[in-house]
Length: 111
Length: 113
Image 1 (cartoon, each protein chain N blue to C red):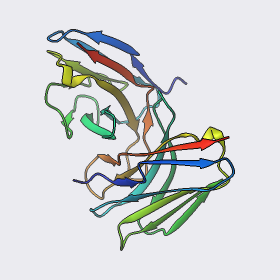
Image 2 (image 1 turned 30 degrees about the vertical axis):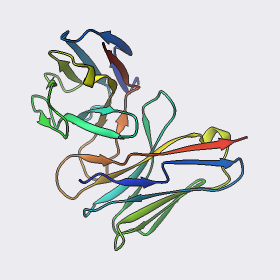
Image 3 (image 1 turned 180 degrees about the horizontal axis):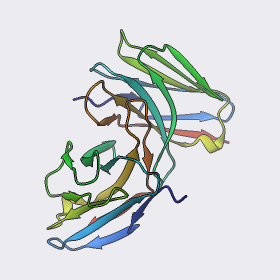
């Protein structure tokens, strides 16, 4: 399967703490993207990291990519209750037109 | 700009009935996709299109058909609904290119009894 696998499946933290979620995959990629899904809504793109990049920042988000280990992590710093959502990684290969989504991490931030 | 819209938002069908889900986008994107989302299984690709008049199968195409007669619309059809097709369906679009990101519609919740 070309799907990403995420862990943990669920994460519960206190407001102000950092949240880290991981994505592992098996194929070669062009880039890896992270998306967020609020309950009952569609997915929203957060950040994209290319295969030749190791780290990328966007506001309170930090993404790392280790292509030798075929893994990526998403760090959300100083979490807020509004960060409560599901987070998905999506793999983009070097051929084809498909995105391969992981099964997601459900994050709950307790006020 | 409305972005990506889906019609209807919610539908209940009886086994064997047919229906069509409509995805419309005003972003002028070439690529459009239909996914289904089931608990614990993430998003699974049903069918996709890389341009007007073209369609291709994804990971779980059985029981579904699609059409892309206009660039801005992508239709997903269920000819004979089954309880296993109870799911939340999402449409997504993106521009051409590997560095592009997907834009999602709000989803259609389908219950097949």
